[in-house]
Image (cartoon, rainbow, N blue to C red; front, side, top):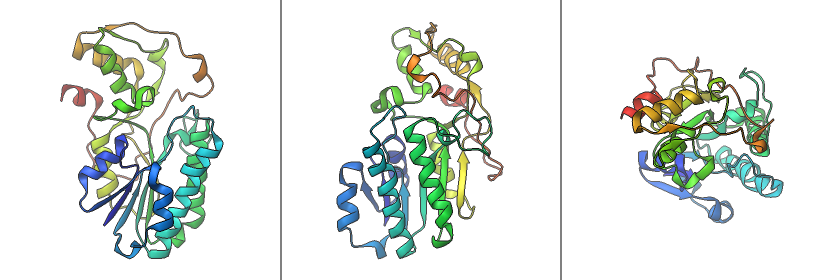
Length: 261
């Protein structure tokens, strides 16, 4: 049996489709699951994707409850029963740093991911096998329910239906490392690395303006930049690049290839 938390989310659904014999857990039943589930000896792997993922969420009690407390309780069960774990961290832990050697979270979501990562590193020897993945900008089919939290690849595609695409002013200077969800699932499930916490992107960032132009070329929509949103000032990553030196020989799909699909 494979446990997938966050199974109703964008990335979680893709894991569910790629696995057999899956027990699906979402936030609305995670507390009851931890309290009442008694078949841990039947679990082959835990894929932990569930979290409150909004970067603008300021409800500290809820963020702690679902992102930190539930994660640690789940990991303690994995340790007790010797179950391998693969879980979602986030590139947001790096904040505005261009280096992936420093963690500098800029919002409460990122802080919760940083907290769990530190807990895992402090307890890594207790796990049979644990891998955390700091996801960079994940895109692909099935993002619609995420709204403004969806990838810009998807948001620009939706905007294109109106005939106009709205990147931020200055988007030609904002770089992002985008990773297709299909590649992400393949890497998480098939890599042969040991326990640890790893970046998961392509290692080849492109500007937001480039993404907008690619969607514009694909759809014939006009580029119509908008002012940078004030709520994001000081809480936005202007350059992200994954350190993929831990993974060799994998050919990632590019945004251009995805759009030409």
